[in-house]
Amino acid sequence: GENVEQHPSTLSVQEGDSAVIKCTYSDSASNYFPWYKQELGKRPQLIIDIRSNVGEKKDQRIAVTLNKTAKHFSLHITETQPEDSAVYFCAALIMDSSYKLIFGSGTRLLVRP
Amino acid sequence: DTAVSQTPKYLVTQMGNDKSIKCEQNLGHDTMYWYKQDSKKFLKIMFSYNNKELIINETVPNRFSPKSPDKAHLNLHINSLELGDSAVYFCASSPSSYNSPLHFGNGTRLTVT
Image (cartoon, each protein chain N blue to C red):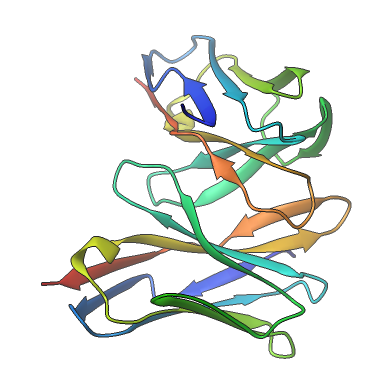
């Protein structure tokens, strides 16, 4: 069935280090993969997305890579800062009878000052 | 100037009651959604409407009834509330139902006692 798996569930890094979050998906037809950041008590907000016609996309300290053959994609945050601490969700657009965005289970990132 | 606004922000009610959550978007988007986020932070799609037409109806109890009077509004009515309905409910919108990012509202925290 439709599934997006996300790892790790929690991640603690020292300020300035890099953080990597990985996701796998089951639907080989998926072609859109957004990442959302949710701060405590707030709404999820889009931070970056990638479509299947590219393998990598970068926006300042954030980058996403996509391997369609292996059906996995990753979020990379470099030079982490305490304000990067939040829950991060990956998602994949699943296409069956309709299009729907299925979310991973989330990664709680803690950046230690 | 909130793009996706939902009310109320908090809702505390007793089991068996009926309640509604309202959502409005001023982004001119065609598609609107309801997502449920449980205590473990899982984000699960419930419903989606495209131009007032229901296009996604996940396995949600029929006590939950969405209604879209126009493409800028999507309301959620819940009958006979149960303890397990306690969660944060997020409304979201997107330009289309395909391949486009979601813009979330600030959420409605529902507590059923």
